[in-house]
Length: 277
Ligand SMILES: [Zn+2]
Image 1 (cartoon, rainbow, N blue to C red):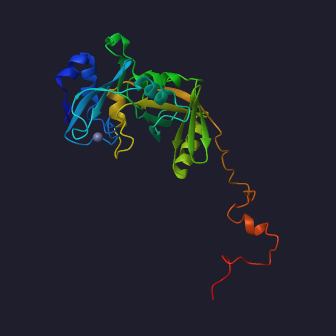
Image 2 (cartoon, rainbow, N blue to C red; image 1 turned 135 degrees about the vertical axis):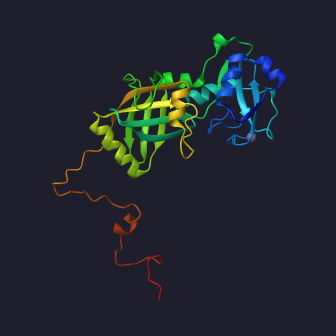
Image 3 (spheres, rainbow, N blue to C red; image 1 turned 30 degrees about the vertical axis):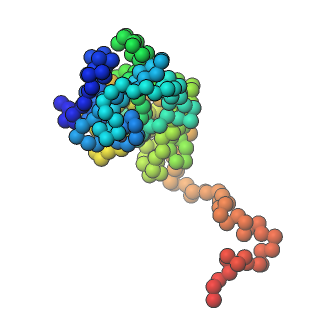
């Protein structure tokens, strides 16, 4: 049941198949919705349904009432913008978080690209509708899933790989990569879980996950919206610490201190280093 009121102008209702309208109505309360004009989160009591179109593509978006009234707007370069957003090799504009569940594999990665709601040729029929999130998911080898987070068992894929980096994870796919930043402690726990589960994690994407909110709306989103997931191999997991051996750590030079260590005249202090009297 939607709480936020959706304003739909007559010209929008006319231009939009009824199924689009239902889809828009279903997601109007999602916490991660962004305004089509200013890009800010939609938080007010109402939202405007706007259609942006050029000669090739129509997209249905939401907007703040103060930013744009419901209507059909001409916007050149829509197809290029949409394609660039889905296939950007630098990574899509995306919210991410790491998680864990009881069932193996337990390590979870949630991805919510901030992208257009729907995409169809101008004047196209519903059969032509292409969900950009479905395109995004398919490119990464994710398959549609339904059910509870603690019960789903998505198929493995080799289309994408997860790599552990010092500041998070990277999901590589044939067209590019998504970066998933993580707090070091969270990442360390996540890596331990993934390593214990045969270097495997589950990657999940859906709308309305609320990854920027506390609490998130992950469970509700996966239970009620289209969602995609796959089991994906994790590479570059750190070796488990062997605590019964003395830890031998190779001392790496600290770049900040390096100039002083390699100074040609080690006895001389720079003005910066000289103690103040
Ligand atoms: Zn706005």
